[in-house]
Structure formats: structure tokens, C-alpha cells
Amino acid sequence: DGGITQSPKYLFRKEGQNVTLSCEQNLNHDAMYWYRQDPGQGLRLIYYSQIVNDFQKGDIAEGYSVSREKKESFPLTVTSAQKNPTAFYLCASSRPSYNEQFFGPGTRLTVL
Amino acid sequence: AQKITQTQPGMFVQEKEAVTLDCTYDTSDPSYGLFWYKQPSSGEMIFLIYQGSYDQQNATEGRYSLNFQKARKSANLVISASQLGDSAMYFCAMRPPLGNTPLVFGKGTRLSVIA
Image 1 (tube, rainbow over the protein chains, first blue to last red):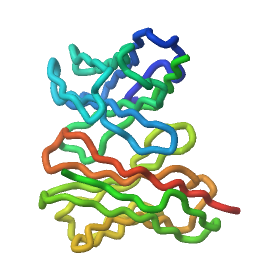
Image 2 (tube, helix red, strand yellow):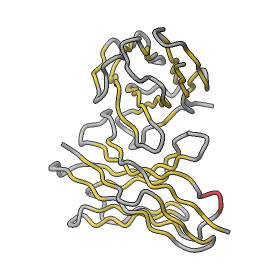
Image 3 (cartoon, rainbow over the protein chains, first blue to last red):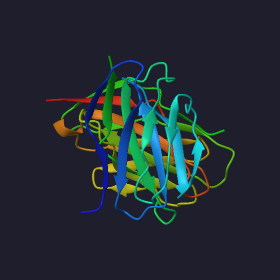
Image 4 (cartoon, rainbow over the protein chains, first blue to last red):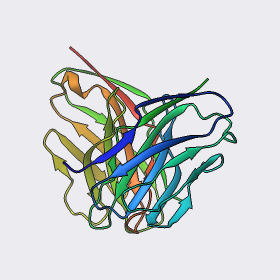
């Protein structure tokens, strides 16, 4: 079945450590996105990529980095520069001929 | 800039009743798309329904319908015959005119269905 996978579902890290969240899709979608969600809040855009080897900052890119070396993969690194990284992170993908964005199951990151 | 406003932080509905979740939007683009997503406690985002700005008819998908009032810039979600499994967060979102661009989300409405 086609879809988006994010791993792991739960992630714990110590403060000051970088951590990379995985996002893989087999939908052959060109565009991929990373969103952050805090409790009781909506989704805020971190980064997005419309094609391989290209990506743009979203509204809250500070303290995060991404890469897009393959069409299927769009990993997100949460760096130690991110002041409050504990949150729920959602990855999504889309292509122009479809209206919806497809979402992965999310990764819940807790920084201790 | 595009903006989505959901003014109802929480809503309660009796099982089998209909409920309307409000969404207003702001954009200067004539071409746009409006979405509703459901987010259960598990966290996944489930696509419910889509309305294009040039669509003449209101979108419907099973028990979900979108009450699209373009002049008022509103895109309310109507859920008919509510079920206990409808309890979740609901997000309204807007897509800019160009494809493969990020959605803009509202803050969401938490719907609780009461038996």
C-alpha cells in the first residue's frame, strides 16, 4: 500500500542533542512538508520541498534543518538551537494533480 | 497573506444529531482550495472533504458536507448523524493557487460526541 511513514512514533532526547526525524513516502509525490503541532494548537509549517535538492523555509524554520536528496525521503533535523523542541511533528506530501495533502502518522518528540 | 479562522475551540453534539463547525478564511487570490481534516487522539490527519473556489456545488462526502459561502468567505463543515467516533479535532485549511504549496491551517475545533 502507498503511504507516508514516519519513524519513530515516540522519540526522547536529552536537551542539547540534535535529533533526526524520518519521513519516507512511496506515493511518487514531488512535494513534501514538515509541520509542527503543539498541544491544542494548529499546524505550523517548518520546511517544505517542491522538488529534489530544493527546499524552502516555512514560518518556524529556526532551529531546524532538512535535506531532500531523494524524492522519497525528507528527513528533519531538530538542532540544539531549537529553544522548545518538544512537540508533535507531522510530515506530508502532495502532487499538483491532487488537491489533498497526505499525512504520515507523526512523531512525538520529547526533549528531557 | 492567507488566513484561516476557526472560532469554536470546542463543540459538543448529541449522538445522531447534526453539527456545524465554522471556518472563515481570508485571501486576495481568486483561485484557492479549502480542506477539512480530522485528527483523532492518535494524531493522524485524515482528509475529509475539499472545495475549490470555482466549484459551483457544495462538496459532499458521505456524512460530511461543506457549506461554502464565497461572498462571506466561509467554509463550514456539516457532519450529519454524529457518531461517537466523530469525536476528534477538526482543522480547516486553505491551499494557495499554485499546486505543491503548503496548506494554511486554522487552530482547530475539538468536537465531542455525547451518547
